[in-house]
Image (cartoon, rainbow, N blue to C red; front, side, top):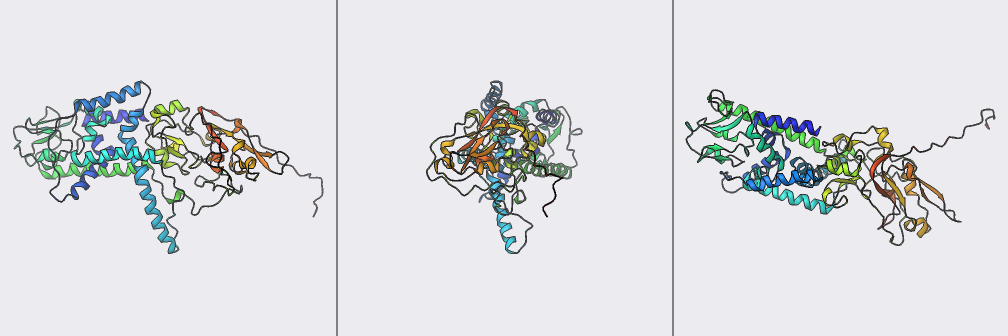
Length: 501
């Protein structure tokens, strides 16, 4: 799908110029919104733009750096600079908490009125502060550039914008200035958010033009034309009939922008209250399998360790999501857009800091302190746009081993505190954790079967010990299929025996 999308965008650029940057790219649209809002709040007149020289060395340097990273096997620079990935993380880290807060405020008011049409979102786990600060720094740069220089981020920092700008040099249709009729009024340059209209030379830098058509709308002499490079006023997209046709095309673009915003928010997968249970239902009693519901997380059991645990978990590898095939393949394909983080109903998917190393910064990993992977849930596999998470049938996903369970007896409260627990076994959907008699006591202690464990993390999430877990999941570098659990046969009644009643 990623290859098809790239080809479609390339063909669009070769025909119409950088319309992707203007009307499709969600981060580009966000920059336009920021610019518009900043103009509304200015006490003086709105900020007008003026022609500026391109930062050629910077823009092509970052493009070469990103391409070199791909060749050398790292996608880190794409993760940090890609507009789609940045927009996904901005929605995940900053917009989603606002939406959840508003949703819960509204649902609280409705419940006071005995109305339950809007359900609250409970158990939301925000990303780690370290990754939020990284994305916040990027957002500050985007906002600053948008307020001061319009689309400077697109034409200087964004490698996609630089690549499409180079492709647009060969575009069939492009904006140009008719020198014979131009009155040099400067209106077109004042509204050019790409700062690419050179009125002294009466030329347009097509590599930076994002085809927003603002210049076409304001030109009173119809000297700004859109069409073939060697065309005339008769064969351009905007004819001499005046503002009506200018407005028609401009409104068409705005409709496309509105549709793109809706598409971007939909792809970002903002989770509303219906994805969560109404109240924190306790399923730790063992009466409900954690795989029975996509939207419920076990509440941690009551027993707590009396003394802090002392044996750290030996996690050699992080746990990559189901469908990743392997950690290496996943790191190569994931652009850290965080759509899967938004789609995950149990918040087990969290953006990584250094779990995958520096080159895997912000790429989602399974964080079993935040939640666990629901047994039948495949939502993350349905939204991944890059192929980093490949689709799996539900039954196949139930057997895909993304990690293996490990048990540390010296951390278990059954051993340290001689307290009955069993939370890990109660929440294991494959029964890879089984309680067996412990010593000469009446207590039972966990026993693990790694071959049938799928690494869902329900046991680790339910384990009550702190700061180190008594049971945890160590990631598989290569995902494999676990063995099917042995189904114990039910005792059959003796049909010849008479009923005792």
